[in-house]
Image (cartoon, rainbow, N blue to C red):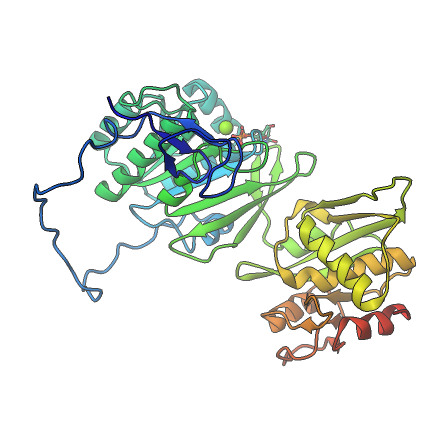
Length: 453
Ligand code: TYD
Ligand code: MG
């Protein structure tokens, strides 16, 4: 009898016995028994039986790659790395109700109108529901072909016959591969369906976009390996209460990762936001303590965003540290550096940090802006108006220059800012009139702007 086989749903590592924690990735409670992709583990090694010799080519071939297809939705095309690459597999993840189906129906219509034969397969909604949404979005006349189907075998057979340029699968969790003995949505079904669709894309040259649901902790539900299989992983993010939606590439074999596209959810679907800085700063009132404008870079584009901090005496023995839109560990580090290097304690104080507009920032260049917001809130002292801040803080309290200083400053100038605080050492920006203040370390920064430390 074949040994039972267990695998980790987070990293895909396989084991011969169950355990509570995956030895490979360290995740807890992710190991489960699964029915493998093929008939099961091989009983012998590959052995002496010969395979087929693979044809080798060299790097310099004279085939010109087929051109990328553009949808005309610039925010989408840019996140894809400049359009859709033929034969690519793309995974779009996001919370339920965030607007994935809306985005992809609009994308399908846009690609179809540009002459790319497009098929939209919905496993979640009936064709009538998709048609109703298309009518509401004013897309009813787009030459998109629809199917409401979950049987992967039937879908692949249809694709072989129809030969579209692009197929959209909404969603991968509803697909059912009949060669795998478990329910749709299970780890092995999701893995098998994604594998089938990805290899199908490579074999036939059809681009496949798959929708993936996201679990509570923000990962695409199903095995991590799905993210490794596909060429591009995009996340569609946003706060439910806000109308802004951000499409972010977290992996892209054909373009820059961390590129973002910004959309606004309106009554008639998603509208592109071509000037995100203006949007993120639109809710900003008069400069107040705790509010600082960070000049960031998202992918290839500069984006200005407001950071808001609140520091208040804590009634708890364990003061609160609450962060929205930034990394909690990084906040703890900044607080520790401020305390150790500048002698500014935050013990006994609750600290709240929020990135306005629902954007999530991962750049270390936000360190200095975060420190500025925290100090400004703590000292109840607003920074000079029309000032942007950026720069990285090291554990020693030294400041490191951020990349693309020039682009950040140009964007700030475009939006009417007149001065910037950034670490010394970075390239100075030719061609901007922004007054640069360049503290050499954190102590200097605190002394200059908050008169303490
Ligand atoms: P949907 O695309 O169904 O989300 P997902 O596929 O990610 O689950 O979007 C659902 C939400 O979007 C729903 O709450 C209503 C809202 N919406 C609008 O505000 N305007 C629109 O034009 C459409 C189609 C949806
Ligand atoms: Mg949906």
